[in-house]
Length: 230
Image (cartoon, rainbow, N blue to C red; front, side):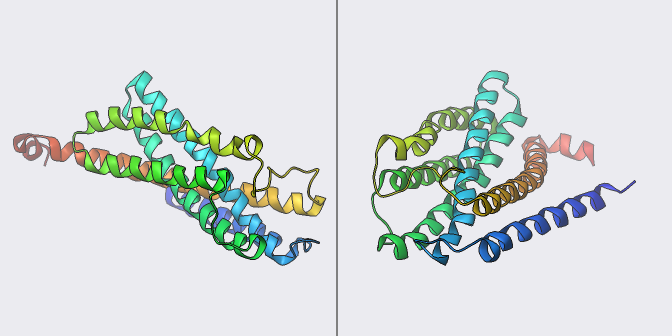
């Protein structure tokens, strides 16, 4: 049987290879769009990043709620690790959306409801992570962060529903009925590739967070106890 290290390397290679294949298919093999041309290909990265943003912020909400109910530190670690990954995806979605918006809308940014709520989401969760860094006491930090995590999650469904509630510049959600079959396959492959990469990042981030918590707990012990453990 493979050792833990070899298993980790195997899954890393598998996830990276799948990601490379999916993005290559979307960026180079999927047919050119009749209206937008090749510029639409950025959606094979932008859309999955946006989906992962909403998914992992939802997982962060579950972690925050889990901590408030169960008071277990693993829920708190899960909440902020998923929030970190979601924030990266959020920033990527905003950046790629702007790159797509310039040639298609003629502007890098507009205060469209979808764009505005998504940008607000980024600011909220960046503040959530900064707040965690500013608080030293682990128990108090977990309680406050969990409460904030539940509160700011209210913007996540608002982001999703914004294009349905306010018909504006941003298009509504795409579906298999609005895309060519080959485009749908490429988009779904890209979405699963992003999911695989995010789950891989989450696995290693949770391990790191557990080690950080153990180190923080060790430093919080009186000097005598630390010496006794050596």
